[in-house]
Image 1: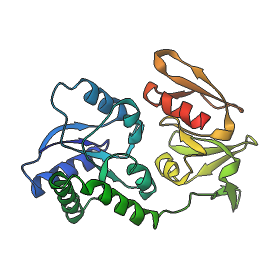
Image 2: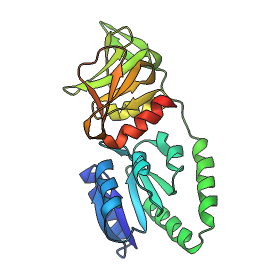
Image 3: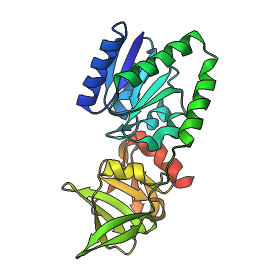
Length: 255
């Protein structure tokens, strides 16, 4: 069996590689990729045969790995890995056979590989497997955040997500800018906020910015296939969306 790993954290990638080799040394790891861009390039231009299985982290440094499927068609089964269970239902819109929460245990990885081998032996079981997993995951789906408690002088006050125009990181400090143009400080990282906010209302534009749909004025076409998001209120810098995510932001704004 030939497999690839798509994971942007070196420690997590090495740990998964070691666990795979320990469980099944016959699995050949033919590539380890770290980003959407690198993955798209590998699937488009790699001259070797497609892998039999993909281990894919959902949250990569340059955006959710689902953006890969906007650029290339991956037909082999996928085992998703992530620290956030909010992405579970989205994962099963593609050809996923399992969904592993980090840190990945030997027991859970063995179970996922067993499902893969059963799928290969019984192809018709794939649809039934995914339906069962989706039903199970729906029971545990949680609501997205409506409010954050933010510091203001000597108090903590509720900040409604509906009042947030954009969120950005500046010298490791995460700031939320409201439509009133007032700035608040958040304790969460951008990765954590990306999983807590409703993706219908908020979009991770790049590593520095999360933007609200209500704050989008328009989109500008930029060189190299990139997009610029123009907001209804000023931002500290130009908000650029990569070429690979340009299609996603256009779909999000026009949905």
